[in-house]
Length: 297
Image 1 (tube, rainbow, N blue to C red):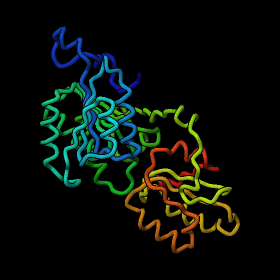
Image 2 (image 1 turned 90 degrees about the horizontal axis):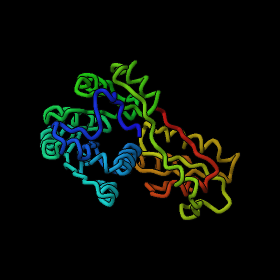
Image 3 (image 1 turned 135 degrees about the horizontal axis):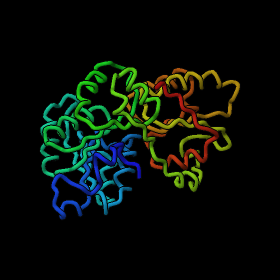
Image 4 (image 1 turned 180 degrees about the vertical axis):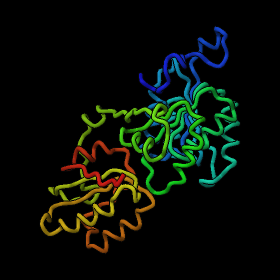
């Protein structure tokens, strides 16, 4: 399993900080660190990775910077410890000290971080706790502000490598963020294909879609990055030409109120269906006519 972009000459799974036979025989301790454990793309990718590791070789533990989210239960049901540090805000500087304490207590050989705040806090805490290896996950080409890129570049000497979710994110990280190319690698998200191939179509009338309608679905966090405001504008232009066309938006986020208001103002309250977060996305997709991806980046 291609888990980390660490050369085999640098690191051997199963070898911990000590050199004793007992240490070499035990599973390698790996600490995953993420900003939160609410059901999002990066969060689900972490859960899939942690729960599918070979427990004979790896001993995973998960730390999140914020309050407990819905995915904590999924991890605990899989027998994986998940500790949420209850960070009060994005600038809770005490979180680094608390995270360092947890790393010292667990004594991992590897820390892998996901998302910007956890990347930053996890790197600092891992260095402070003297964890041998730190790997960061870069999930997005951040185009809203430059200061996160500056902090990422400033602290990148603390990581052995950065795992980018796509080729485009890797190119952005090198060309715009200024990270060293020799510390960047691409590992796309894994997909559980069977869960989509075998899903039974959902009855979309339970979401307010009239029977027999054509339905386009968008799945993702309701955030400006996802471009849903432009999808709603496009839906308004299609209303007269395609009276049977409906849109289902699966996901939740900070833009929900503004998007709901926009749909209402354009007379689309009966055509745009806000489904919220759902655990049955494969069933929604199997019932739809198509998927729309309006993301801006």
